[in-house]
Image 1 (spheres, rainbow, N blue to C red):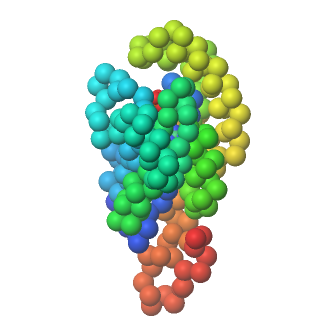
Image 2: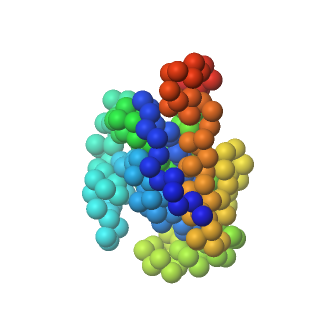
Length: 218
Ligand code: 5GP
């Protein structure tokens, strides 16, 4: 059990965790638990043109904007990545990442594979995690049980899921979310393991050790 590593060491710049999954794989619930567990880890609030679902809070779940505002932000170069997913646009603002990272927080991005691939090009130090459902029929059951989408939207999401899971092979970690508690423990272990990396720890050890941080990825 990962129980005593919550107070992560803070450094000048935090880690970047990028999490993708087909809808219904349990990504949002897992990420929420992870963020609640690690106080030094912040959720990146994306911009989207999708209308809010019931219960979603503007500025917390997403920054909900019109298509015009979104396109203006694209034109201004405000996004580190953006993509069209299931007919709506989603993007991560450069400012969101910079603010969290310069404050020494780790940041967690819940984004689709197209966006993750864009981040991979620009942030070599990112940690890429893909959450897989046990199988497609379970994915369909979960989407139906969630009750937030129409049958047409569910069908589209399942179709997209077939393409998305093919992308999972280039991620650093694959988490199969069959048993939720087990998947959560594994996710916590990934975060803790990333804080045991030589490059990360070298930024924290006392200067008297005489270990300069030459291995840190830039
Ligand atoms: P949902 O509408 O179900 O909240 O999200 C649909 C998809 O958009 C999910 O795969 C989610 O991870 C992705 N998504 C959310 N925010 C972003 C973002 O900022 N960029 C990209 N590329 N995808 C995002």
